[in-house]
Length: 85
Image (cartoon, rainbow, N blue to C red; front, top):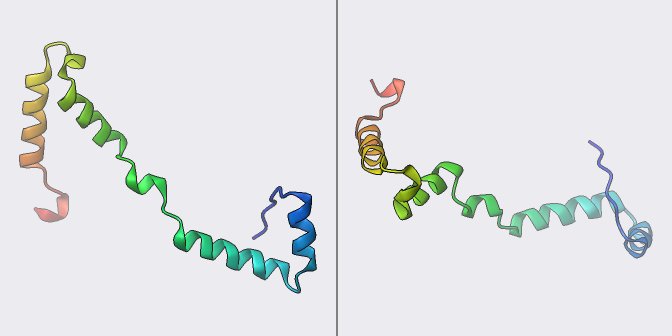
């Protein structure tokens, strides 16, 4: 697979001086991914953020917060997957 990157002129000159620039870039990217902590893993999901918002500020529900919390409890207590039946 090919990809086009925009690099500074200085980086391009240094890459062209290497004996195998493609291999160098590939290995550098692999090393970077091995040490990179992806932000999506630490960020709560959309649903987790909604639950947090409801728990922290039930005013958003305009009087439906108790019913909503009861619905959440019922769903959590009775949730099963098809293969669990």
